[in-house]
Image (cartoon, rainbow, N blue to C red; front, side, top):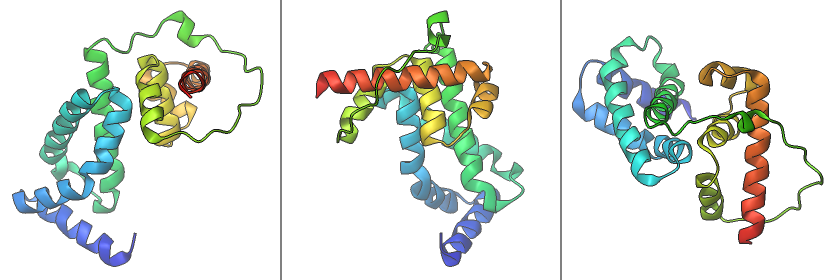
Length: 179
């Protein structure tokens, strides 16, 4: 990010912290698409993603005054969004992790390289268990390691790795069937 752009963002954040609705609207416009993508991948459908996105921004703006370093806004907002997704999934009992979800799967062969459209991959993500989807999203798209994921989801690190492996296998299977 260019330093001029960073300064504009910090200026908007500072104004937003003091309750400036215009600045909050500008921040919203700058971050809504990226945060929606996180919600969409984690929630598994558009309607739930939009609901959680809305709740996340309301919460973020209400707690923005607690943010000490404006340079950390993006990471802080992303964490707010991820936490709201996790809470929504827990409330709706979508995160029903069973013992099968913890068992590692054995990969038998190297996957073939295919070109898939984003829509196909999103549809495949929608068709795996919530636990697998959550671990895959946190690991691949959000950049958390398995230790961090185990703390966030309150599971063991090996369970996180097993969920990730199972998610990859399931998505590979779905994409091969649909291709």
